[in-house]
Length: 328
Image (tube, rainbow, N blue to C red; front, side, top):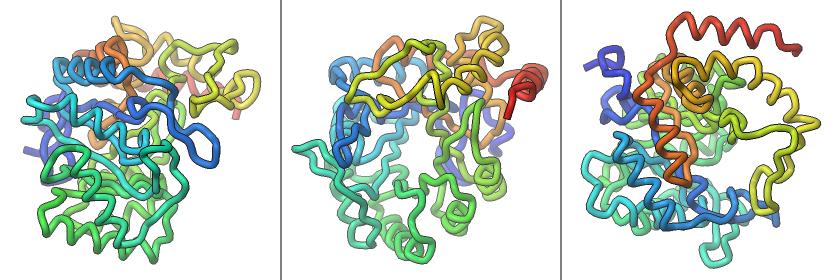
């Protein structure tokens, strides 16, 4: 079955990979607070019971793809996901990432490690936390890693495939040259990139489309900007990665852009967030957006996008026209 013949609620994870729900569950937020150099890189406090309930709600909505990373909560996100999937693992595809070092006890991420030895160490640790014998998709998390050194990372990942510790691999990078390096391998299933209605690298997407790779979309809701719940008065806690956002400055233009497309995305019974996800489903058959979720309410809203399906060609054109009038 080719990508074009899949139902609109399904996508393929690589040319020969498994089918997954067209929208996946992003697990960054459920990791809870963690820091790097004293700065927050999490989304604030979370309730683990609510996180588990949100994962169960996603499963009930037909979600079969969950994307996490070892550094999210410094191991905590992987542990919560494993807990939630106990007894419900059949048919579920789990992706995680490696490359940032971390201290589980202190919830700190002091640096990075892209050495071949660390690839194996990180994989083994994730296998234990995820309570699994095989990781479906292991992704390199260092988006700007040196291209020459990345050859060694690629070789280490190939070894893990051969040993059966992982089924496939990918790279979380917005750079098309780096994406193309991994795309050479038949075991590369996906490139994870930032993309949404407001921004994205079309060259990296083109690499995915040309090589039959899934383009896993981080930030599909613009880190909440496309949720419809922010305005100029919005403030974030000191433990939230967005705590430095300035809605009278850098983020003001983004709010204006959201206002331009709000009515189009929220038409036909959709919420703004659902419309933003449906835009991505229409934008490319390679896209698998992974909105971040930490509550049952968010899970139910975001994954109802699967019932709405991709925007129509007319709606996509309206979005383009609305954004074209914005000042550069």
